[in-house]
Image (tube, rainbow, N blue to C red; front, side):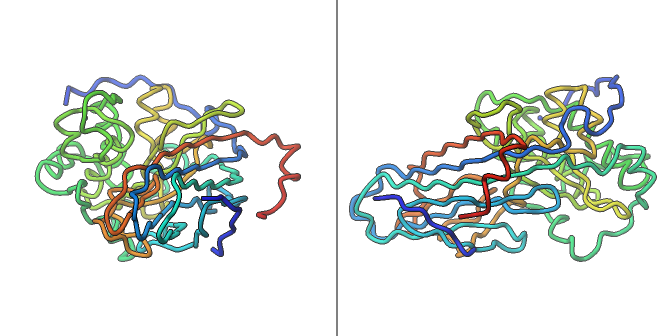
Length: 344
């Protein structure tokens, strides 16, 4: 199929002692950075005689922490902008009827300015928060369990044990953050990691960013503290290169402060950043979607997605796994930003 340019309307050992010097936001990250981010999708070996191929691709969007411009979209069919509910995730959706050629390739190119995001350090958050008052009704979705993120049983027992004697949201969440940091190790060996299954992490005590933050979210919600899952891509600090896969983090809600970010898996990789990543996110990332157990728009025929960062494809109502993905970035020097212009 000939591509054409399209624009759319759019892981429990005893806790180890922490001896981490306090860090100021910004010590490990430039305040902001601008880069081109390319998201490439290739559908290979589409079944002969397929009648309908449906493609959903998550789309990055501008928010308080990043400015995103979709510069270019190319593919065999137009991609139309839709929104998932209830988390308001942005999606690009397309259909191919009776495809006659394979592979089919889609390329999305974004211009992104990502800013360091900080709500302050632990002492500041403790001062500004107003304790453990009930969350607003609008945050109910961030208190409920997800399919792999329970809030009862073993999880509730762990949450209660680790917050005993703590007062208010920030004290309790910091205790849970430290528990996950000291209990789970970043290790992608074997199988089972990467699904964000909180109970699996309790048993295995290792995993990737999804596993760290799923356990954290389970524990926070078990204590009545709203917490949400966010996912995107890490952007290395070099000038250009390939990104091997996604990265995720979490936020919790503290009354009097709002949403507060944490990145426990990144802190685990460099313990100097243990304090930094409680309340601050660096600029070396781009966010795409929020939430778990997602029903897309238009609705997919398969079950809700565990999380949504890679393209989801169905062929004649069944999930298609012949999808190749490639993600690249290129830093944009300040002098060259103006020449990139607006979306075209």
